[in-house]
Image (tube, rainbow, N blue to C red):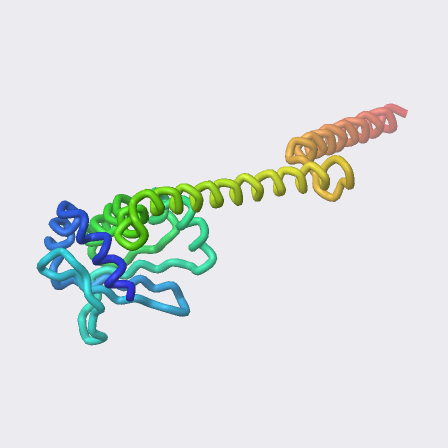
Length: 187
């Protein structure tokens, strides 16, 4: 299933197939801990499931907890992973993961027509944007509530100010103690 989805994206991008074809026969393993995918680049610039006996050229390790961050910001996806092996092949995979995009309207247009596909995709984008906006507003409102209404959180600046005040007080107490020692020494 995964190779078919990737090949669907590659089929529309000759430049991407050309880049991948340069690594024909190499195997990439994406290891997410509980599951791993092994894909082999083919001479025509597509991918296929790799055999267990095929040597791995590059291993990309990703934590499952980082998957939402990767999905949210594909440009920084490779900053969340650990890469071992062929650096050139890993760089090609990184470029493809950042550049390949699924054109949902085009695929849906074949099934339900261009106008309906355009409206469906626009509606989905609006729903996603609304969900993100709602999530952002909820987070801001909760933060404000726990900072102002029912103080359970402390602003970083307040913590920094308190730390500075404590340091000044400590220094003042030490100076006072030394003055007291000097005065007692004069008696």
